[in-house]
Length: 231
Ligand code: C5P
Image (cartoon, rainbow, N blue to C red; front, side, top):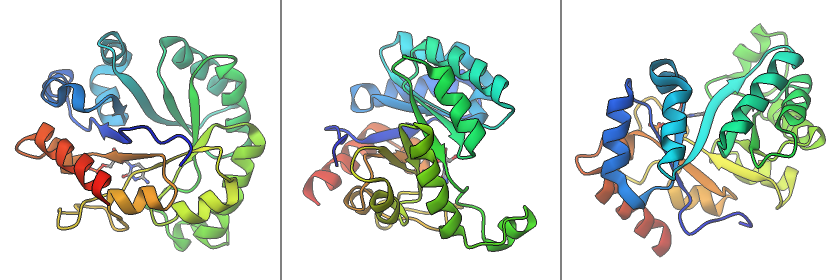
């Protein structure tokens, strides 16, 4: 786990307003350093809130899953890079990834490829015109991501070990879909515990509802950190 920090938890701020996000960030205090801003909060509060998090000393994982023509991707990525955000997701298609790498230039932004959405099954791929297994396409795209110069990948914790064996120890591997034993899984179908995800090769784990919907989010984050440390 070459990138593993003392605290590998990234909290997903899947809330509908900047105010809700502010309350969570303030309740979590110094227990959490990296926050994921996804489509929902982006639609509510946009880059203003991203800049607010950064100004408050937090790191931002911007989960925008960019997918567009190369020039648009390149220009948008370069604007994200200029904000000082730490991670950005783009879809794992060759031209999109190459444009993103160009756009980030020499900045410190880390680009993560989404290989295949974990909600996709074989039928969804067939509908897209890709008649292959999900694992096959994910493996192909993981290799292409490395060729394109991406910094890492987002993967299911259940695929983390396979992805790690394809890309080697260097690239950053981030896994959502993690739950401590006994926690409600919600709409997540393929979950692993935080410790399992890390053991399978993840550097960071994205956790949303288990922490954000806990009655005491800070206590829950502390509990998960202990669970990881003692595993
Ligand atoms: O609440 P929960 O822990 O399930 O949140 C997981 C977060 O990770 C959400 O923000 C979701 O969008 C994101 N995610 C995911 N599965 C993926 C990619 C991203 O759950 N394959």
